[in-house]
Length: 258
Image (cartoon, rainbow, N blue to C red; front, side, top):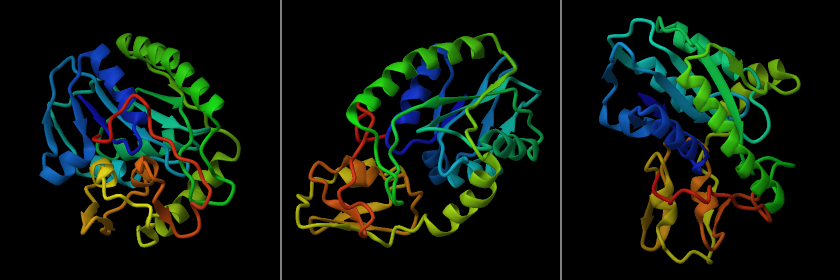
């Protein structure tokens, strides 16, 4: 069983590769939460995986909320791992997720990070990678995921996460501030360039965007994944003045429907 969350497709790309190699079922976390399907039965030899992007040097709140509600029937210490996608580093994500799992009585045996193209653009100095770096990260990710798959197949107990510099400050101080103040959708709007194509609506993993009279309207159930912004073919979706002249990125191997 592999539980995953993805906004712009990086983590879904990873989850698909893991699912195919490990022959484990994929479960999209927002769908499970929406449908109330939070109890899963495990086989004795089953692997349990969590795949997600890094949001401000920690797991997305939706992932931690899912873990809190998740029920794994038949859990008897099966091999449990996580793989996170990040633009640069992970901070103390390993410790945060391991604690959340431990609170459920589950042991995390392994964790990995995969460097993928940056997509967070809502703060000064934050933008997508240039095309050359984007292509290099995507190419390097293929071999990284292959190695991760090999480790998982061998059920290795190891953690290979790139914490980066000042991980305590990033995860313990900046991340809570991000979750409190940067998750609001109220500054999203569409410019006159909007053509009502509904790609923003279709790409939102939370089903939080609805096109009304040819223009997107945002609800309050936002994870700040920015899929709606990145997928817009007209660059019409903006977030106040923060996205002015910023770039866009959506995993080229994924469709808008996650």
